[in-house]
Amino acid sequence: MIKKMLLAAAALVAGVGLVASPSAYGAQNTATARSAVTAPALRAAPQLVCTVNDNGVNFRGGPGTNYPVLGTVNRGQNINARGQEGSWLMGDLWGGPTGVWIHVAYLNC
Image 1 (cartoon, rainbow, N blue to C red):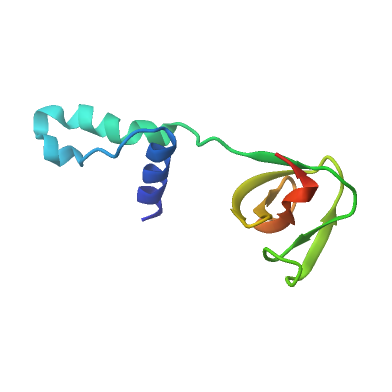
Image 2 (tube, rainbow, N blue to C red):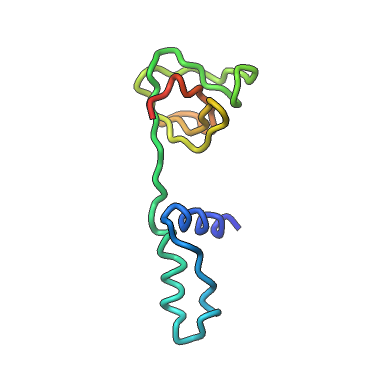
């Protein structure tokens, strides 16, 4: 299931529509159909990397000040963005915790 989701996401990012399964094309076109389906998965999805722009910035367990502070980061720390809710970005800190939330005011993306 995750593989199908990744294929669909890669196809959307690449601007390519999904292709029917190889069996829909018949035996003579199986290789062509297979490459059309798997080619987008080989391309890495563009990744948004943001950098913390201040010292002592809290990262939290959720998108808001009502969520617990899990720790702090300083200027120059990078984060791979995975999502956003309102003014809060969720991502994975380089060399640190994953799935943390930081307010966008403290990030340069």
